[in-house]
Length: 265
Ligand SMILES: NC(=O)c1ccc[n+]([C@@H]2O[C@H](COP(=O)([O-])OP(=O)(O)OC[C@H]3O[C@@H](n4cnc5c(N)ncnc54)[C@H](OP(=O)(O)O)[C@@H]3O)[C@@H](O)[C@H]2O)c1
Image (cartoon, rainbow, N blue to C red):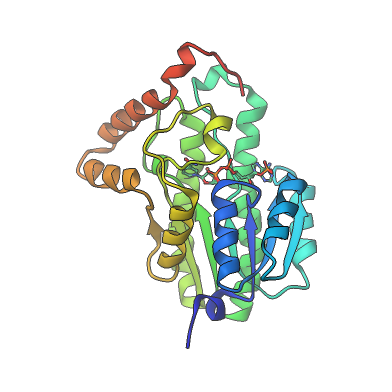
């Protein structure tokens, strides 16, 4: 019988596994019998997750994916493994007026959300194509489908991921590699605090991970969570400028507390 494990196993690499959505992916994949490489910066958080996942083999790689050195270590420390799945969940956002934010944080966001995703997809993509089967799950977002005021750079990084995944799916599908963009709305995780966004109607990381794994190999984009689906349907017939306005209002709701408590990332 073909299962996710036989198609995409035995090893999965999950970036951003120390928290939120990446951690939920790791738990869900471990339940299905995948062996796991857990990637993020916080070694302690990765090790405590590894201790929890006693049913399977786990390797921890604590690296900063904003650096070339970190990316090279992920490649080096997985070279001996039969990796069939990459879940690229590491990422972060900022919010507020772009010009008011620290330039370093904005550039680092491009490095983690885009450059690292391109580098790891290139590295693992070659390996997956060589074995003739595998999967790439890339974390896009609800904000990927239009520009968004007060999350201009973050939305742009996610637009890049979304477009990248859509094009790549057509390149790699015929070679046996399934590419899936996961575009959730607000999710209860460490993301909101780091991005200084207050989210309501947030989905749980488990909902995102389970819906995404269920969609792998079946579609090119999955939009888990109630709000994501609601906005997908309600924005569908608006012109792009209309979507920009509506999503900017939604972001305005998530950042209105900033007027009271100024924050710099
Ligand atoms: N939460 C949401 O509302 C939401 C909605 C749509 C899309 N997304 C996307 O979903 C993905 C996961 O977000 P989340 O909600 O799970 O956020 P989270 O709870 O803050 O987790 C982010 C993960 O990324 C890792 N990370 C961040 N910077 C890193 C770096 N420089 N090097 C290595 N790892 C790094 C963090 O680990 P360390 O801090 O230990 O390095 C952490 O494990 C992101 O790409 C985000 O853009 C989130």
